[in-house]
Length: 288
Image (cartoon, rainbow, N blue to C red; front, side, top):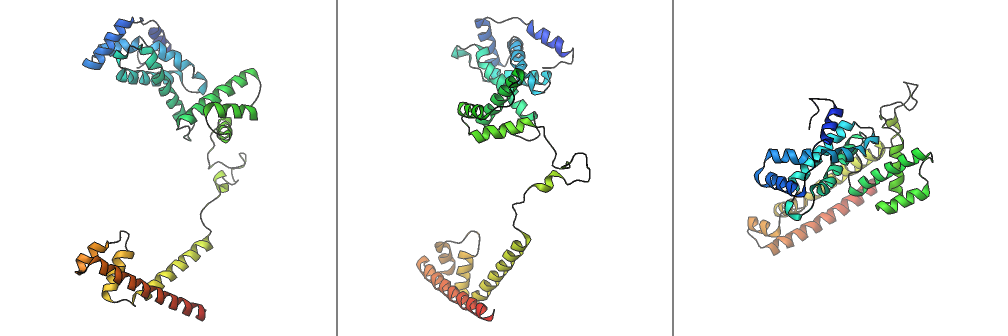
């Protein structure tokens, strides 16, 4: 759909004057498009239903987005409906297309009403549009913001928690704000908002302490490995010190022994390591 050859108002006028289709004619056009990919049939089918697109788009005109863009997205949904429509089900095309048109427009609104993406699940989408509708109605009636009872009512109707409703309402209550914006708008030297975001990373002293402990354990292990003979060392390294440990069978084939013998050698090597680590640890404690 394009409005290059005239104003959006002219396009809307043309769409509203397009002739209606009888059921049989609509069915024949849908079949021609599905079976023969007849572009002319698609054009007539969609042109006759553009008034439906405009009608649905007008319901979402209060979301602060261009009416022309809403109609454009609704037309995308109309084309998707034409591609998926099954004429033999004996359902009018307008009934089937309504869902696709509305879904396409709603997805467009959710992608563009805020730079922060939200409402990706079906329940969150329903919450967004129901809450926006309620807020708009209350604004017209001058009754203020939703109260706790209304939060509960919306939560039960949509199937989300009351906390989700309150969070969505808080997002709808204020415009997007950059994290680089100063906390005090009138003071450019004030701290940025991002400076007050809590950091979940460990403190530096904890990070250094963990690294020291890791290095110490690695050194203890390397010293303990000297207690093993060559075959024990190979089995332990390939079985325990690699991301994908070798199987008993594969090691047995490499070493020319049974997998049971590999298991026995591994157990003996682990016992040696355990004894060496305990001995070295006790020595370190004594020295310290």
